[in-house]
Length: 415
Image 1 (cartoon, rainbow, N blue to C red):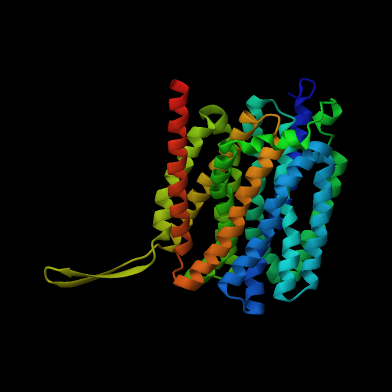
Image 2: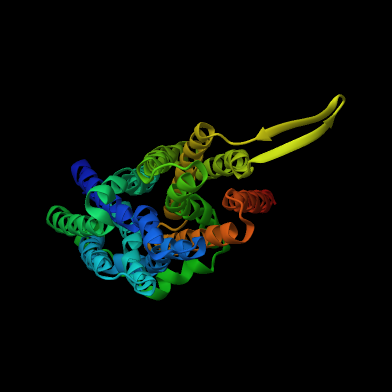
C-alpha cells in the first residue's frame, strides 16, 4: 500500500483540480467529431454508416490505449505522462485541418483518439493522492471531466459557424498545447515516486485481469461510459435529422444530455462511498430501462377498429419529452460511471492503473462499436429510434448478468 500520510489537503486538491481540468480539455477534443462530423458528412456526402465509423474511430485508439497508458502511468507517473499525451494529441488535431479525403480523415481521427487515453492517466494519478475511503468521491470529481463532451456540444457549433470546422480544430489543438504546458509546470510528482514505493512488474500489474469481476465491471462501463460517448456524438445528428433543428441548436440540446452525464459523476462517487457501488449500479440500470424504452419507441400512426368506426391516433415522442429523457439518461450514466471506478480501487488497490486501463478500454470500445452500430441500424432499418432499441436490450442483459452474479456471490459467502 502507498503511504500517503504526508500528503497535505492542498496537494490533494491541486492534483485533483489540475487532472480534472486536463481531462476536460482532452475529452472535448476526443468528441470533436460529434459536431464537425456533421459538416464533414455534408461536404463529403457520407452515409450514416460512414459517419458512424468516423465518429467511432477516435474512440477505438482512445480505448485501446487506456490499457497501455494505465501500465505506463504506474511506471513513469501521471505528471510526466499526461503532458506527453496531450502534446502528441495536439499534433493529430492540427493535422486534421490538412486532409480532406475520407480515408485520410479516418487515419488522423485514429491518432486523435489518443485524447481518450487521458482518463486512465488521470485515474492513476489522482488515486495516489487519496486514501481508499475517499477515492470514490475523488475519482467521481475527476470524472466530471466528461463535461468536455458538453463543452464541445455547446461551444463547437458556434466555433464552426465563426471559423469553419478547420478553424475549430486549430483552436482545439492550441488549447491542448497550453493545457499540457500548464499541467507540467503546476503539477507535482506522483506520491508513489516521491515516497519510493516498491516497483511492481508488468506481470503483477496484469495478474488481476484473470478475475471475471474485472470483465463484469468492464461490461458495466461499456454502457455507462461507452454508450455515453456514443450518444454524445450521435445526438446532434439525431436532432438535426428527426426534429429538423439547426446544428447550433442541436449541439446545445446534445450538450444538455452531456452536462449531467458529466457533472453528476461526482455525486455518483459520493453515493458509491456512502451507499456502495452495487446499489448505485442497480439504480443506474433499473432506472435507465424505462427511459430507453420510451426513447426507442418510433413515431407511429395507429388505426383501431372502434365501436363506431375506425379510430386514428399518433404516438410520438415530442422534442421536449425527448430532451428531458436524455437529460435523465445522462444523469444515470454519470452515476454508473462513478460506481464502476469505486469498485476498482476497492478490489484492486495496487493495480488501479492496469485494471482501470482494461475497464476503460472495454468501456471505451462501447463508444467505438455503438456509433457504427447506430449508423448501420439507421441505414438498414430506416428507423431513427433503432439505436435506442439496441441500448435498451444492452441494459437488460447487463441488469440480468449483474443480478445473478450478485446472487451467486451472496450464496458463496453464506455457505
